[in-house]
Amino acid sequence: MSTAMGGDGSRPDGRAGSGLRFGVEEEFLVVDPVTRFAVPRAGEVLRQAGGRLGARVCGEITKLQLETRTEPCRTLAELHAQLVEGRAELAAAAEAQGLRIMASGTPVLGRTVPSPITEGPRQDLGTATFRGLHDELSICALHVHVELPERERALMVSNHLRPHLPTLIALAANSPYWAERDTGYAGWRTLVWNRWPVAGPPPYFTSAAHYDEFVATLQEAGALVDTGTVFWDIRPSAHQPTLEIRVTDVPITAEESALLAALVRALVAVSLPAVDRGDPGPVVSAELMRVAYWRAARDGLDGYGVDVRTGLPVPAAELAERLLRTAGPALEEYGDLDRVTGWLRRLIEVGDGAARQRRAAARNGRLTDVVDHLVARTAPGAASGLRPKESTPT
Image (cartoon, rainbow, N blue to C red; front, top):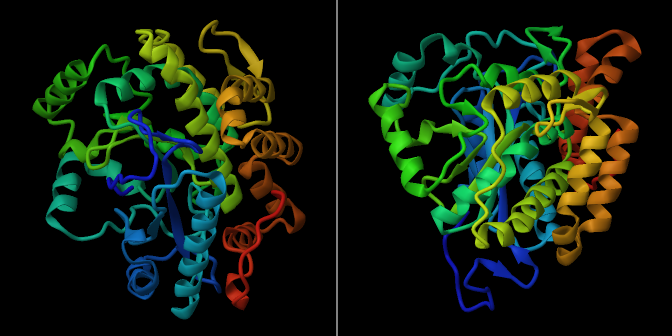
C-alpha cells in the first residue's frame, strides 16, 4: 500500500467516510496449459506483465509464483475492480508466454518439491537458515493490509483479531492437494506454513515495546533472516503504515478475495473502539489456537471448528455466522453488509474452495480437471480478451 495521505477528508484515526483504507496482495501459481503442471516460468510472465501493472506485480520466493497488489482503497467496489484488473492483466501476460495462472493455495500437479527458489543473496541466506523448509514454499496466500499507522494501536487490534483467525482459515480453505494427491485437508497450505519457526498465530503482545523486544530475541536466536521473515498471520507491516492479516489461502475468484478483505477490514474496525478504551483483547492460549488452526485447516467449512474461548467443537458454518455478526456493525457502516452476507451464505451452500476443487476432480476422476477449473475461474474471460466478470462461486 502507498503511504501517501492527502487533503482528502480522511480522519486522524486513518478512516475516511467510506471506511479504513485497505489493500490486498494475491499470490498465484504459473501453470503449463498442456501438462497442467505448475512450472518455474514466473520470470517470463513478470517481464510481460510489468509493462501494464508496474509495481502492482512482483515475483515471489519461488519461480512458480507471482504476486499482484492493489493500491490503497476506501471501498469494496474499488478494491474488487483493482483485483479483477490485476488478475486479467496477469492472465493476459501469462497467455502471451503460452502459460496460465491459477489461484490455489497449493499446486495441484507438477514436480514442485523441492521448490525452485529465486536467486539472490537474501534467498541464499534464507536457504542457509531455514534449509529444508524452503523445499515446500510453492504455497499461495491472500494478504490483507488495513491502514493503522500507530503501531501500539495496531498490535492491540492484533490481540483482538487472534481468536478469529481459525474461522478465516476455514472460510478461505483452498488447498486440498499436495504432491498430486488429496491430503484429506481443506487447507493444506496452513499445515505447510506453520512448520516455520515464526509463523502461525502471533503471540499476545502487551505493547509495541513488547513486540520489538520479542522480535529482537528471535533475531538473536537465529530464527529470522530479517524483520521481513516475521511471518505471523497478523503483523504490523515492516514497510507500510498497516496491519497485515495474512492467514488465508488465496481464494479462487477476485470477488471472494475482495469480500474476504472487506470482512477482515470490518473486524479491524469493530475492535478499534475497545482498543481505544484500553481493552488489550482476550487472552487465548497458544495451545488451543494450534488445535483450532489444525481443525479449521482439516475441515474447512464442511465440518467443525473449535471455539477458542471454550475449546468446544462448533460447526464451522456457525462459527462463520458468529464472525459475520461480530463484523456486522462495521460492514453496515461501510455499506458492505449485504454483499458480504450474501457471499457467506453462498459459500456455505456451494462449499469452500477445497470443496469446489474436489468436485472438479470427482466429475471425471482427473486432477487435470481441477487445474482447468481453477484457471477458468482465476481470471474469467481473460483468455478471450473479454473483461472478467465475477459470479457466484461454483
